[in-house]
Every structure is written in structure tokens, then in C-alpha cells.
Length: 413
Image 1 (cartoon, rainbow, N blue to C red):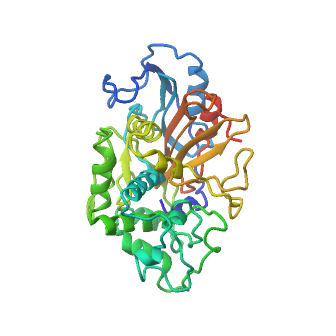
Image 2 (cartoon, rainbow, N blue to C red):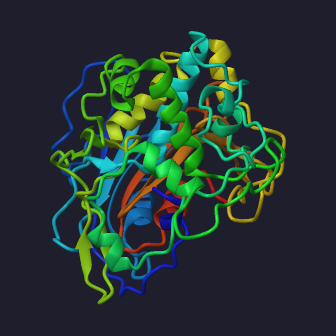
């Protein structure tokens, strides 16, 4: 999702409350064979998971009047025990499948970073070589040399990826307009009809979250491999981890992939306040559609060393020792004000002393996240995931997130 959507002022919307039900289920460990949950609807209660409070977890995802949320699916795992729950679609009144497909937004950055690090291990991409040397002419001359690593850890100083301001009705009308990576990159660096933006800061001196960084990395991956982002995603991550419900957002150049069933419907209100279903949208070449189970499986594979060699895993988790550029992000826990992003991952140092790793993501009509403690950290194996149907253009952290994290024992403050 572009920075424009992430920071857009929310459109006023009357809130609605809904009933929700939950399930406690035993989940097989990564790589094991278990019953298919793709079409399972919440409402079935089996085993009780030790240490997880299903009542508190369900209450956390129940939609409150001012949430600007139109549906939720969530799961919390502690060891080999798992809770799954949903809050029904407030527009249709229908329950949401526990393994519903959703647009993962910037969680795709973790996939892009993983591929870049694999190519680094193969000596196809040197993370400490400049973008200008790899892609001459891509950046205007006013920019100092920026390394691939600085793109991946958000310390490049490049301008925000967002374009000119658009009305909500324009956003809705243009949601199925496909734009290739090259055009999106040039629109950010060389916008027509207005001055070209300069750097926000000198490379490597601060951190600022920016989607443009990862669009350039994805473009570099395509140039260095000679393959599309979708092909690299499938060959390097989807097939090895058997992510059978994970799909590139665009099936081929310019062709929009229909949302697979079952899926979480995303909405935004038009200028009249009417919620419009925006589930079907073009996205860009880095966009990904997935499910809660596949996202859990991806991060399990990533943290368990199934995708990266030890040296690359260490690099991926290296958070630069620089300040965050402003107060808009990295404002949780004891390290607030300092950089909190590594290479495709976010590190949260929580107020209770627990450290979690993962990634948030936003797309038009969607918000989601996956975070977990790491084995050997002393906090046990605890992970939580949510996918939310947004009902506004704000694109920020949905109220569901801190409630769910707190109910799981991970206070986001």
C-alpha cells in the first residue's frame, strides 16, 4: 500500500457492533499434515489451550462502535496450541472463514527481503553495492549513493512513495488500475506537474518507513534474475514451503487476480459514507494474497532457517543504530524513537520486557500483522496474527491490534 493511503485522514463512519464466536483448536507443527481449515467457520470449540484465554481473545477482536472495522480473522499460538477467532462481516452479516484469504499489504516486504537475501548468498546481489551502480539512471543525480542494504532497512532517505492527493471516490474508481513497478518508481522520483522531491536525509543517518525502497529492491531482483517478482516468489518461497494458498496479487502483467474463496472482504466509505467493497483491486507487482495459516507457515519457515542461511538470517535481523526520522513510527516500548525496522522485519521491544519480531501490512481495505517471540528468548513460543477488513482510508494500526496483543500477553505500549 502506498504512503498516501497509510497517512490519509480517516473518513467519518458510523460504527457498528457485531456478535462474534471463537474456536480453540490443536494446530499441527510446521510441516506436519493436518485437517484442512480453509473453509472452516468459527464457532467450533474443541480443546482448551493452556495459557490462552479464549474469552479475552474473542473480546479483543469483537468489533467496537468506533473501530472503523468491518470484519476480523485472528489466531494466537502458544507452542502447539492455537486459538482462532473471527468477527463477522458487518456489511453482509456473514461469518468469516478462519483461514480466509486477504491482501497482506506490506507483509510482502518480508518476502521481498527474503528473496534479496537469498540472492545475496548466491552472490547475485551485493547488499553493500549502490543502487546507482546496479540501476544507472534510476535515481536523479541529486541523490547520494544508496546501498541495497539501506533500501532494505529503510535508511535510504528516499522520498515517500505516495503520489498526489486523491479524493476517496478517485481512489475507489482507480483501484483496479494496474501500474508496473517502473511507473510507480518514476511517479515517486519524477512526478509530473510538480517539483521532483529530494532526499529526506543523508543515507544511513536515520530511518523512515517507505514503500518506494522495496519497489526498487523488487525491480532490482527482476533485473538481476531476469524473472518476474511472481516467478521468484513462487520458486524461492511458495513452493519450498508449500504455501498453497499464497498467490501473487497480479497473475501476469496487467491482469488482476480474482480473490480466491473464501476471502475477507475489504471496504472503504465513499464520499457519501457508503461502504464500497474494494476486495478486487490491481495492487502492484509486489502484492500478495494469502491466508492466516500460510502466513504463519511462512514466518515459521523463515525463523526456523528453512529459507535463509545463518549469515543471511543474522543480517535480516540487524536493526540499524540510528534514530527514527519522526514520531510517526517506532513509538512502542523501551526503544521508542530509535529505528525498529531490520531487513523486512520489525522489532518491538515491549513494555513488559518481551521482544517480538514480525511485520504489519496495509492495503486498500485491509490491515494485518504477524508477530512472534523467538525460541530461546525466555518468553516461550508465542505468536499472534490478525487480518482486518478496514472500513476507512486511514490505513493506521486498527484498534483490534493492541487489544489482541494485550489479550495474548504482549502489551503494545
